[in-house]
Figure 1: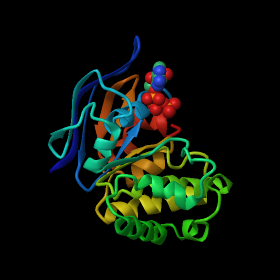
Figure 2: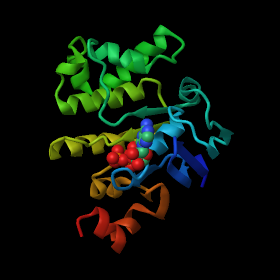
Figure 3: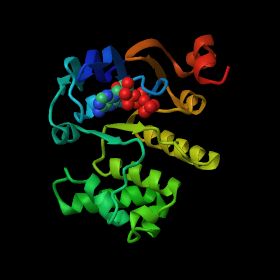
Figure 4: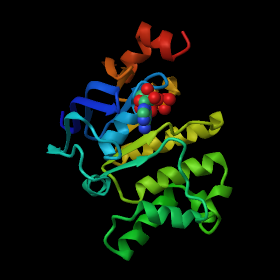
Length: 237
Ligand code: ATP
């Protein structure tokens, strides 16, 4: 199977703290991959190293076969990778549409921007209704949709979602996961970090378990749902 992203022996340090101690993982093209791990395991750090926000001290990050480690974030975005960050990071003082526009900053033309607006609005009609509303006045679920929509404005081939279900009511969590699957069915490869392990593994083609900066287990979503250690640590027994 062709991998869209391959990480080999990636090490990330924050000063004297080694947050990632040689992480290797593969993201097959067209699939959903989830990273599970406790608080502080290094999940967000892994995503930030891929998107170039955090520098990796060593290792390889190959996107479609090309080394992208430590390139500038906008260069990596242009390659076709985008991230919906943990905590959504909605920009205050801006409307919904202005927030989306920022997600499309690498686009070359206004026409392309408008086309992508329409696609995001098709996926999240509520954002269209609220396009001129201050983004910070959106509900939690709507803000999550906005964060995802903003990441989709650049039409990424790899979409990274950091805790998309955080703080949402169960019905909204289901909606978000339906949308993740819909995006995937339309061809977007997805890397997902989730506390909601049950939900994440049920949609994932592959999962990795990260513990204090190291991958300790990998398998298909189904395999990990049945794994005793995973059940105990992440699925409430
Ligand atoms: P969570 O689920 O709590 O978000 P995580 O698995 O995403 O956790 P990271 O945020 O990647 O974990 O953090 C990995 C380790 O690196 C933690 O020990 C954290 O304290 C440390 N760390 C993260 N960012 C920094 C930073 N900017 N400076 C120093 N240490 C950091």
